[in-house]
Image: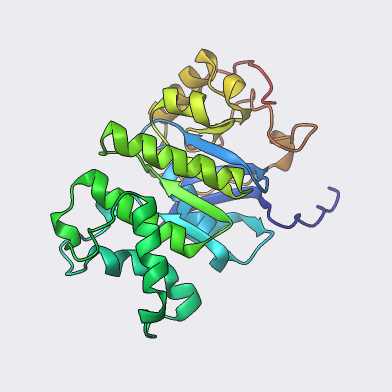
Length: 287
């Protein structure tokens, strides 16, 4: 096997990556590169491994097999967890929550008084001007998500990893947050978002990685979200064995596309992780 070239600055390359819990893989055998400036959607059935992959990219979950090669320090990535993972009963104000985005620059225990103007500007950018003293527990779902996006603004990261950023929020908030994401992308930032709404993916995300605990397709959204690929993702998810052990990865199984942005995953990835093999299916090569 030939040696891999170094990862380019700003890129994130996955080499045979397997992530999981208690030595049981939750997502496995991922090969591909998230390019600097990508606007990438993560799509798949419930339990497909989308959240696990995001946590692996940020370094919260160590790899069970394979590697993540980052063309930037892991600390320069920003991560937005699902809103229901955050304890909103903690006595924080909206200003306090947004200010956490400055910790990387100011330190967790230093005074943020000198940055108050920047925090207020971020809150205004997400439509929360005048909310700074409100306890976070009193916010609606949309208001709370806006506050989390204000925190992201203050982190000023080049790579943003978003886990279900529009779940449980109203249509107006969704439109405002999508506009913010598009602004970030226009500035050359890399955005990876786990999403359920395929209409949103088609409308705003030019690239997609379709997961079903393993890669089904990765590339141009129109090609990846074909009926054949979506049906295959459903079959693979239904056949998944939660108690499967880690299996060896064969790099020959997943060949990068000629432009390096994706791969043709028309082969069958059973590897002992499924109760029954999913039938092989030919489909379009992800562009």
